[in-house]
Image (tube, rainbow, N blue to C red; front, side, top):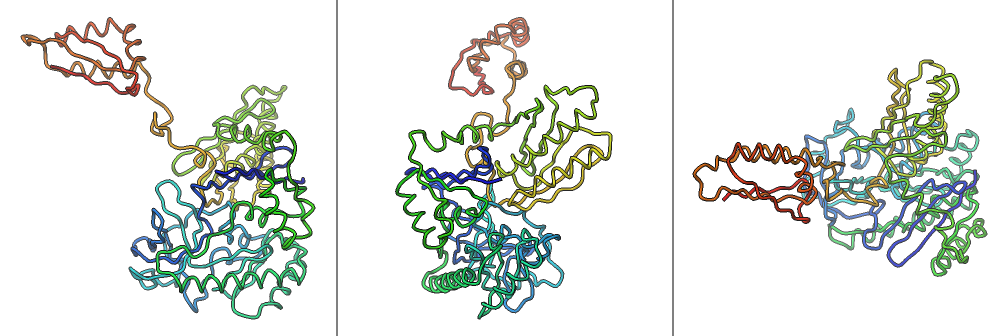
Length: 519
């Protein structure tokens, strides 16, 4: 299926939408006032070494210190490789360019804080105040600072250059063994000095001249970074990664893309010059949007983004998904909803689950949901049906650039899976914690609040013999209105405390807030 890349540029932000068959499948943006930091390179200073966590905090000049895990610390002469290079078999986990290119919108969950066998402890590798070159691999998420590594990776069009390791790997998405070997021979033959390369998926069919051009560019870039490192004092920013437009061109403009459409003449000119210079074969795919209808309006992008923020997602059959995000995981619940099927309940459930599989894969990708994910399918009695649903899920997940790992459906109909991430999901990027409910997702019912008021009133001392036997109760107007229907209970409370309760409302009060003033 061919795809389209839509780029909408305004003074305040740049939005990118990846479309497949008029359907939004990926969405990301850069805002002038809050640009991302993944892929940036810093000269940092170790602020604290944590032996118990086998990690360190590094001051890079940002609001929060970067988190550096022991396995992300490069050691000269060591044989240890970063995770992205540990395996290069296309069938057995391992190399994929998204794992090694921090600038792409994917990421990974943090490893457990335990040392690998034979690895030197972090207290022997780093000292407080030590200066080092690091690269951010994860945006700050929630209360956590950015994740970082000292294994620098510089992504080009076809290759990712890793100057500290002596290794050549191939993306596992290139499955043809003959092509994998051809690409490794090209890169190995052109390599003239120490440094490792990951051959990206887009390099399939790459010529020797294209590889040479990428390698020369990346080598010059690394020399420039080293020079800047020596010229600045820590903490300091050494290199800013490409903006969202050029990252999109680098990572997404391939033969599978039908066209790349930009709605701003100035940005179009910048892009077409870049593509004509570095990717001339794709120049005819770049178009300027000059119709009266707005680009994102034509493709209903904003409406699709709005739907991606909702908890409930309807399926075509009448079933639906409920997507709930907790602090440590995301749960997706599948329901038959309005879909009742024909005669066989098992067949109805199977159809709903199979339809849900496609929508789940789409929503995970669109919403950029990462970390631990639990999929709660409708229970199926037949083992072959469970296997059919799981195989369908696996097939749909292959379209996702982010690395995923799913375990088979349990007897309870649950699938445990994980998906890499480097930044917050779409809901948290576009929204913020509700200031009214404080992120709980609910407020107490008015009746619950009223009964709490009654309990607090009963704790007051008796008004017998007091000069002023009144009690003033300040509440939200909705609570005042509901108190009228609870008058019989309020009268009983007043008799117990022998005081008259004077109710006053204030629309500025939170609905759960109330104040009792007892003279």
